[in-house]
Length: 251
Image (cartoon, rainbow, N blue to C red):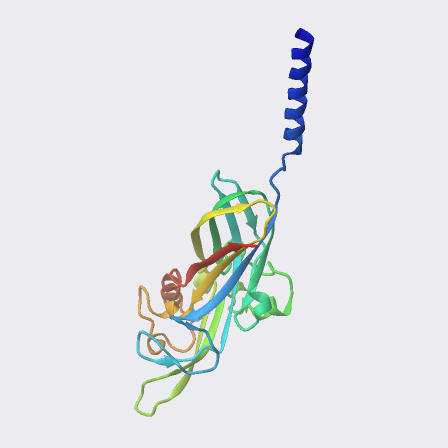
Protein backbone atom coordinates (compact mmCIF):
# COMPACT_ATOMS: atom_id res chain seq x y z
CA UNK A 1 0.00 0.00 0.00
CA UNK A 2 2.81 2.38 0.87
CA UNK A 3 4.37 1.74 -2.53
CA UNK A 4 1.06 2.48 -4.27
CA UNK A 5 0.65 5.76 -2.36
CA UNK A 6 4.23 6.69 -3.16
CA UNK A 7 3.67 5.90 -6.83
CA UNK A 8 0.48 7.98 -6.96
CA UNK A 9 2.21 10.89 -5.22
CA UNK A 10 5.08 10.84 -7.70
CA UNK A 11 2.57 10.73 -10.52
CA UNK A 12 0.72 13.78 -9.21
CA UNK A 13 3.99 15.65 -8.83
CA UNK A 14 4.95 14.77 -12.41
CA UNK A 15 1.57 15.94 -13.74
CA UNK A 16 1.83 19.20 -11.78
CA UNK A 17 5.32 19.86 -13.12
CA UNK A 18 4.19 19.10 -16.66
CA UNK A 19 1.27 21.54 -16.41
CA UNK A 20 3.54 24.21 -14.93
CA UNK A 21 6.12 23.74 -17.66
CA UNK A 22 3.44 24.06 -20.34
CA UNK A 23 2.04 27.32 -18.94
CA UNK A 24 2.53 30.09 -21.49
CA UNK A 25 4.82 32.91 -20.43
CA UNK A 26 3.45 36.44 -21.07
CA UNK A 27 4.57 37.70 -24.49
CA UNK A 28 5.60 41.08 -25.84
CA UNK A 29 3.29 42.93 -28.23
CA UNK A 30 3.59 45.70 -30.77
CA UNK A 31 1.99 49.08 -30.03
CA UNK A 32 1.20 51.93 -32.42
CA UNK A 33 0.25 55.53 -31.65
CA UNK A 34 -2.20 56.92 -34.25
CA UNK A 35 -2.74 60.69 -34.45
CA UNK A 36 -5.89 62.38 -35.74
CA UNK A 37 -6.47 66.13 -36.28
CA UNK A 38 -9.70 68.07 -35.88
CA UNK A 39 -10.87 71.65 -35.55
CA UNK A 40 -13.57 71.57 -32.91
CA UNK A 41 -15.96 68.85 -34.06
CA UNK A 42 -14.79 68.85 -37.70
CA UNK A 43 -12.01 66.83 -39.30
CA UNK A 44 -9.10 69.10 -40.22
CA UNK A 45 -9.03 70.10 -43.88
CA UNK A 46 -6.50 72.30 -45.59
CA UNK A 47 -6.48 75.59 -47.49
CA UNK A 48 -10.11 76.54 -46.81
CA UNK A 49 -10.91 79.67 -44.81
CA UNK A 50 -13.76 77.93 -42.99
CA UNK A 51 -12.84 77.91 -39.30
CA UNK A 52 -13.45 80.69 -36.78
CA UNK A 53 -11.11 81.87 -34.04
CA UNK A 54 -12.46 82.58 -30.59
CA UNK A 55 -11.23 86.12 -31.38
CA UNK A 56 -13.58 86.26 -34.37
CA UNK A 57 -11.34 85.81 -37.41
CA UNK A 58 -12.09 83.23 -40.06
CA UNK A 59 -9.00 81.19 -40.82
CA UNK A 60 -7.56 78.25 -42.73
CA UNK A 61 -4.78 75.76 -42.09
CA UNK A 62 -2.24 75.22 -44.86
CA UNK A 63 0.55 73.48 -42.91
CA UNK A 64 0.86 71.61 -39.63
CA UNK A 65 4.18 69.95 -38.80
CA UNK A 66 5.58 69.05 -35.39
CA UNK A 67 7.51 66.52 -33.29
CA UNK A 68 6.30 63.95 -30.78
CA UNK A 69 9.10 62.72 -28.49
CA UNK A 70 9.82 60.88 -25.23
CA UNK A 71 6.83 58.52 -25.46
CA UNK A 72 6.54 56.50 -22.25
CA UNK A 73 4.14 53.66 -21.37
CA UNK A 74 3.88 52.86 -17.64
CA UNK A 75 2.54 49.67 -16.05
CA UNK A 76 0.50 49.35 -12.86
CA UNK A 77 3.72 48.31 -11.12
CA UNK A 78 5.64 51.34 -12.37
CA UNK A 79 7.69 49.60 -15.06
CA UNK A 80 8.14 51.67 -18.21
CA UNK A 81 8.62 51.22 -21.92
CA UNK A 82 10.09 54.36 -23.48
CA UNK A 83 10.82 55.54 -27.01
CA UNK A 84 13.18 58.51 -26.84
CA UNK A 85 13.73 58.98 -30.59
CA UNK A 86 11.54 61.89 -31.79
CA UNK A 87 8.81 61.30 -34.35
CA UNK A 88 8.31 63.88 -37.12
CA UNK A 89 4.61 64.42 -37.86
CA UNK A 90 3.03 66.12 -40.88
CA UNK A 91 -0.77 66.40 -40.71
CA UNK A 92 -0.92 66.14 -44.51
CA UNK A 93 1.14 62.94 -44.67
CA UNK A 94 -0.70 59.95 -43.20
CA UNK A 95 2.50 57.87 -43.20
CA UNK A 96 3.93 60.15 -40.47
CA UNK A 97 0.88 59.90 -38.21
CA UNK A 98 1.16 56.23 -37.26
CA UNK A 99 4.00 56.05 -34.72
CA UNK A 100 5.49 52.61 -34.17
CA UNK A 101 6.41 52.20 -30.50
CA UNK A 102 8.04 48.85 -31.19
CA UNK A 103 7.79 45.71 -29.11
CA UNK A 104 6.34 46.51 -25.71
CA UNK A 105 7.08 44.15 -22.79
CA UNK A 106 4.16 42.12 -21.44
CA UNK A 107 2.24 43.81 -18.67
CA UNK A 108 -0.82 45.87 -17.77
CA UNK A 109 -0.25 49.48 -18.79
CA UNK A 110 -2.09 52.28 -17.01
CA UNK A 111 -0.55 55.46 -18.46
CA UNK A 112 0.93 56.98 -21.59
CA UNK A 113 2.93 60.21 -21.60
CA UNK A 114 4.79 62.09 -24.32
CA UNK A 115 6.38 65.41 -25.18
CA UNK A 116 4.92 67.64 -27.87
CA UNK A 117 7.95 69.13 -29.62
CA UNK A 118 11.47 68.67 -28.30
CA UNK A 119 12.45 69.41 -24.71
CA UNK A 120 15.55 71.36 -23.70
CA UNK A 121 17.64 68.20 -23.43
CA UNK A 122 16.88 67.14 -27.02
CA UNK A 123 16.46 70.50 -28.71
CA UNK A 124 20.11 71.14 -29.51
CA UNK A 125 21.98 71.99 -32.74
CA UNK A 126 22.46 68.92 -34.96
CA UNK A 127 20.69 66.66 -32.45
CA UNK A 128 18.60 65.06 -35.19
CA UNK A 129 19.62 63.24 -38.34
CA UNK A 130 19.96 65.37 -41.46
CA UNK A 131 16.77 64.31 -43.21
CA UNK A 132 15.00 66.85 -45.40
CA UNK A 133 12.20 67.03 -42.85
CA UNK A 134 14.51 67.73 -39.91
CA UNK A 135 16.55 70.26 -41.87
CA UNK A 136 13.35 72.13 -42.72
CA UNK A 137 12.45 72.22 -39.02
CA UNK A 138 15.73 73.86 -37.91
CA UNK A 139 15.19 77.00 -35.82
CA UNK A 140 17.05 79.73 -37.73
CA UNK A 141 17.54 82.42 -35.08
CA UNK A 142 21.17 82.90 -34.04
CA UNK A 143 21.84 82.04 -30.41
CA UNK A 144 18.67 79.90 -30.16
CA UNK A 145 19.83 77.01 -32.32
CA UNK A 146 17.78 73.83 -32.33
CA UNK A 147 14.53 72.85 -34.00
CA UNK A 148 10.94 74.00 -34.25
CA UNK A 149 8.46 72.27 -31.99
CA UNK A 150 5.65 73.11 -34.42
CA UNK A 151 4.91 74.90 -37.68
CA UNK A 152 1.23 75.85 -37.91
CA UNK A 153 0.44 78.11 -40.87
CA UNK A 154 -2.50 79.40 -42.85
CA UNK A 155 -4.52 82.47 -43.78
CA UNK A 156 -7.06 84.58 -41.92
CA UNK A 157 -9.57 87.37 -42.47
CA UNK A 158 -8.25 90.53 -40.81
CA UNK A 159 -11.84 91.75 -40.13
CA UNK A 160 -10.82 95.14 -41.53
CA UNK A 161 -13.20 97.25 -43.61
CA UNK A 162 -11.43 96.11 -46.80
CA UNK A 163 -11.58 92.41 -45.79
CA UNK A 164 -7.87 91.81 -46.18
CA UNK A 165 -6.71 88.20 -46.08
CA UNK A 166 -3.39 87.81 -44.29
CA UNK A 167 -0.98 84.97 -43.62
CA UNK A 168 -0.22 83.66 -40.13
CA UNK A 169 2.77 81.57 -39.04
CA UNK A 170 2.62 79.98 -35.59
CA UNK A 171 6.17 78.66 -35.31
CA UNK A 172 7.06 77.47 -31.82
CA UNK A 173 10.52 76.50 -30.65
CA UNK A 174 13.40 77.70 -28.46
CA UNK A 175 12.49 81.41 -28.67
CA UNK A 176 14.59 83.38 -26.20
CA UNK A 177 16.33 80.13 -25.25
CA UNK A 178 13.16 78.80 -23.57
CA UNK A 179 11.79 75.26 -23.60
CA UNK A 180 8.48 75.50 -25.43
CA UNK A 181 7.76 71.79 -25.54
CA UNK A 182 4.63 70.51 -23.76
CA UNK A 183 4.29 67.31 -21.71
CA UNK A 184 1.07 65.28 -21.89
CA UNK A 185 -0.04 62.33 -19.76
CA UNK A 186 -3.19 60.22 -20.12
CA UNK A 187 -4.49 57.25 -18.11
CA UNK A 188 -5.00 53.95 -19.91
CA UNK A 189 -7.74 51.55 -18.89
CA UNK A 190 -6.15 48.11 -18.46
CA UNK A 191 -4.08 47.91 -21.62
CA UNK A 192 -2.90 44.33 -21.17
CA UNK A 193 0.00 43.42 -23.45
CA UNK A 194 0.40 39.66 -23.88
CA UNK A 195 1.34 38.67 -27.41
CA UNK A 196 -1.23 41.05 -28.91
CA UNK A 197 -0.99 44.31 -30.88
CA UNK A 198 -2.38 47.56 -29.49
CA UNK A 199 -3.37 50.85 -31.10
CA UNK A 200 -3.58 54.04 -29.04
CA UNK A 201 -5.42 56.96 -30.62
CA UNK A 202 -4.58 60.62 -30.02
CA UNK A 203 -6.52 63.61 -31.30
CA UNK A 204 -5.17 67.13 -31.72
CA UNK A 205 -7.81 69.86 -31.79
CA UNK A 206 -6.14 72.69 -33.73
CA UNK A 207 -8.66 75.26 -32.45
CA UNK A 208 -7.37 74.79 -28.90
CA UNK A 209 -4.11 76.52 -29.76
CA UNK A 210 -6.13 79.72 -30.12
CA UNK A 211 -8.75 79.74 -27.37
CA UNK A 212 -8.00 78.34 -23.92
CA UNK A 213 -7.05 79.62 -21.41
CA UNK A 214 -6.11 82.74 -23.42
CA UNK A 215 -7.97 83.97 -26.50
CA UNK A 216 -5.32 84.25 -29.21
CA UNK A 217 -5.73 86.99 -31.84
CA UNK A 218 -3.48 87.06 -34.92
CA UNK A 219 -3.86 90.84 -35.07
CA UNK A 220 -2.55 91.26 -31.51
CA UNK A 221 0.57 89.11 -31.97
CA UNK A 222 1.36 89.72 -35.62
CA UNK A 223 1.76 87.30 -38.48
CA UNK A 224 4.99 85.70 -37.19
CA UNK A 225 5.95 84.90 -33.59
CA UNK A 226 9.39 83.30 -33.83
CA UNK A 227 11.02 86.31 -32.19
CA UNK A 228 8.27 86.85 -29.63
CA UNK A 229 8.68 84.78 -26.43
CA UNK A 230 5.46 86.25 -24.96
CA UNK A 231 3.41 85.01 -27.91
CA UNK A 232 5.16 81.65 -27.59
CA UNK A 233 4.13 81.51 -23.93
CA UNK A 234 0.50 82.08 -24.89
CA UNK A 235 0.53 79.34 -27.51
CA UNK A 236 2.21 76.95 -25.05
CA UNK A 237 -0.43 77.59 -22.38
CA UNK A 238 -3.23 76.97 -24.87
CA UNK A 239 -1.45 73.96 -26.30
CA UNK A 240 -1.80 72.11 -22.99
CA UNK A 241 -5.43 71.53 -24.05
CA UNK A 242 -4.71 70.56 -27.65
CA UNK A 243 -4.49 66.75 -27.29
CA UNK A 244 -6.98 64.19 -26.03
CA UNK A 245 -6.83 60.42 -25.76
CA UNK A 246 -8.79 58.55 -28.42
CA UNK A 247 -9.67 54.90 -28.87
CA UNK A 248 -7.36 52.31 -27.27
CA UNK A 249 -7.88 48.89 -28.84
CA UNK A 250 -6.25 45.56 -29.59
CA UNK A 251 -6.51 43.06 -32.44
